[in-house]
Length: 227
Image 1: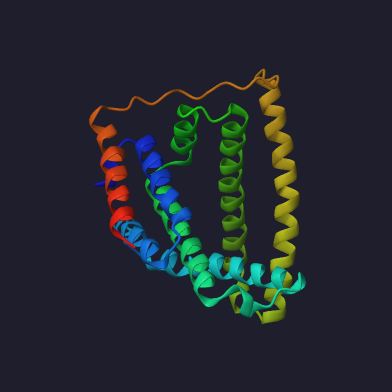
Image 2: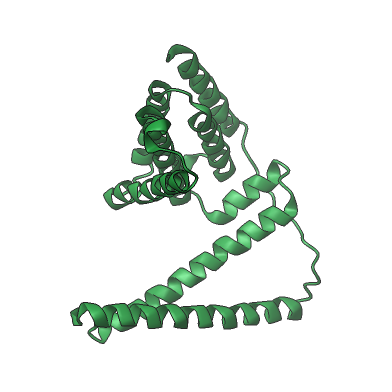
């Protein structure tokens, strides 16, 4: 169902849903919009592992905010339990929405959609390069980890595993540096002189534009109905 919609329209729908998630003042409204996010995640076939992994960044952000509050001299009791729950739920739903978007939409299509709404070219180009770089580093890390497993690294002791992880991290950093040098040389050989050019535009059908209109109307109705 989601795959039938144009990729750029998926990005715009995700932005429409993210807006009420950010500004929802009560847990009731946030829960109502959370049902929509949950339905989208189910339609995008988000696995159970990703559902559970979403609590990791939410807990990390909450712990970081609590630590900064303590360092600044603020008591945890002053923050209140309600606002803390609202913050954690908002972080988790934003993660789930982003995971659904990246599962159904390629990163290139996301950047192309941002260019269409006149996001500065420098930001879209850097975003495309960073996303591509993350993918390359991830593939390289998986290759190194598979080599470690084939050598029996999973049967080693905990201290040896920590040592292998440290060595892999340093090796990955070194490989990333040399890979960046090769990429820069390849771009210069192809005539790149610092001038940025937009990506090819995607053709959006008229019926696809009805999806964000209906979604915006539904979100506005939920905002009015929920207290």
